Image (tube, rainbow, N blue to C red; front, side, top):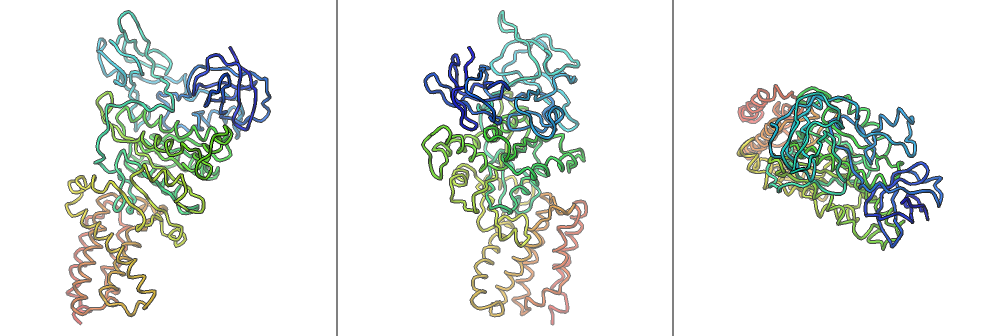
Amino acid sequence: MDGFIYRISGPVVIAKGLEDPKMYDVVKVGKLQLIGEIIKINGSDAIIQVYEDTSGLRPGESVINTDRQLSVMLAPGLLGSIFDGIQRPLDKIKIQSGDFISRGINVDSIDVEKKWHFVPTIENGTEVSMGMIIGTVQETSLITHKVMVPKGISGKIDGLKEGDYTIVENVATIKNGNKKVPIQMLQYWPVRIARPVKGKQPPEIPLITGQRVIDTLFPISKGGTAAVPGPFGSGKTVIQHQLAKWSDSEIVVYVGCGERGNEMTEILSTFPELKDPKTKKPIMERTILIANTSNMPVAAREASIYTGITIAEYYRDMGYSVALMADSTSRWAEALREISGRLEEMPGEEGYPAYLGRKVAEFYERAGLVILLNGLVGSITAIGAVSPPGGDISEPVSQNTLRVTRVFWALDASLANRRHFPSINWLNSYSLYNDDLSKWYAKNIGEDWTKLKSLAMEILQQEAEINEVVQLVGYDALPEKEKEILDIAKSIREDYLQQSAFDDVDTFSSIRKQYLMLKAIILLHDMERSVIEKGVVVEQMQKIAAKSMVAKMKFVKESDIESYFNDVKKSILDIEKLEIIKA
């Protein structure tokens, strides 16, 4: 039996008369059949959050229960798409309603008429269960889509054959006793329920991002979690753009959650033009964008990160490594706060709901490097930007996020104002994955990698201490050894940590290039200390060619870096032979 609207308060609607309402059931509200979700049941009243603008709704209008939770369509055709917070395709909506989303619009998330060439990977008669791969579809030139057995189905597969199918056509049937279940490439999954896995693996493989300050000092593992808090203008969004473009994950899901419209426009206009650095194919062939701008309905913003992570889990279950960017979880928390206020719940700190910490933890816990039901290994790396008011990370969203994430990239407005990007403060940031990843670095990069980066970090910390002394006594009063520390620290900051997103070469550094760059700087440090002990002053060292060669390393192409490093090394080792040193 249909219900009716009893009361309206912004995006929250109270309905009466619904037959057997259940938590998180999707409903259609009013004459326009706006999409909503039951978030609270109070006696005979169903409290609904509506994912569209409720302007014009009136008490007495009908409410229809679909008896289905808020779910996403999962099938070939997701990659390259741009969705809103509840997986409505923005490109198809634009064709129907222009630049703004019409209320009540109903469009299939994925094209149900397009034919895909399906290739079976198992034989008829094979025993299958949830998550097992029964065939593949070449979704894009970069990604092979693996068709899996849906939830709750097991038995012997039958009728499996190669051919061209739409996502709603049957590609096989599964027999279980007398029961036959048709299998399609399309399946649905409720966004608030995590997809099951066999177990989690320890985080022992780094996610290579190509950003030197991250990969060297504060690395994140595949399947790891990171928080990027920072004030406005400090570069949170730019860092997430860079990670989406350059990290070595196979799939990228970017969730613009409550971001400004112009920022999302920049993403939507630049991403389709970007090329994958390894394959030179369009990066959109392995990317899914979810755009929920700050002027869209607040309830859809709350749903958007669940939509994003459910899609990420689907590709993870195929055995892929997925990077999920959530920008920004502060705006998601603000949506929770607004809806909680409409529900007249008891507010917690700063008006956020008392369950904010649990919600944040539930989201990040869905990340991880996992063993899947089909025996493969997949990962989701979750990187969430946080926008604390005034840059104060003592506020609840930042603190709850830092409690559950293992990497903290502290963005510093003063670095951004000095045009030092990425503006990650090396003294305040940390990564709890350093020890977990040390074996991988030693095996794949160099036995001395951990020692090199520890020494670089030590020099940066010494620089901060010496700078406090400089403010009291002046630079000229420092001993030459401390001047040398400042000199090398400057080289680490400007020649290594500072990186230009606009330079075609400097925008990405392979881990091998990072190793050689850092090795060159530390080699220069050792040589400078050696010659200073022989009476040379730091001022004389500024004229040496090796200094400028080290500074130019960041702009050397990957193909030339080995030979360039050898030249730099030779130049550094020749310092003691120079006349200026002998004099």
